[in-house]
Image (cartoon, rainbow, N blue to C red; front, side, top):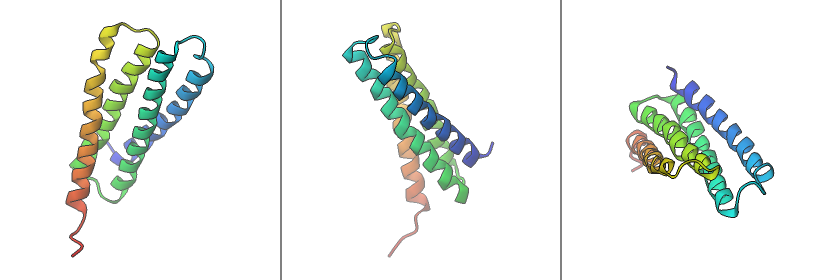
Length: 129
């Protein structure tokens, strides 16, 4: 699979969905959910949007040079967003509380994505001195 294509497409879809879900939460769910549930919904939207931008960044970086670190970062950002944000969306809309057990796995995946991206940057950046 082509990493730049995957990351740019996944980031674009995730970003677009973040806008749609943010608007849905603001307009359609106001009044249907209590303030706590709306706050959870908007946390999911925020994390989804930031990690959509992270995926886009990986896609742009991968256009110059693809390596395993960027693949790991893209996979972790994509999987982490689905698990973390998806479980928060579900909890906000009344899913069973056990769904909350999935959230930390998504969070760990997102953290691993940032670490992989940092390692890529460390290894690929020349010594400036």
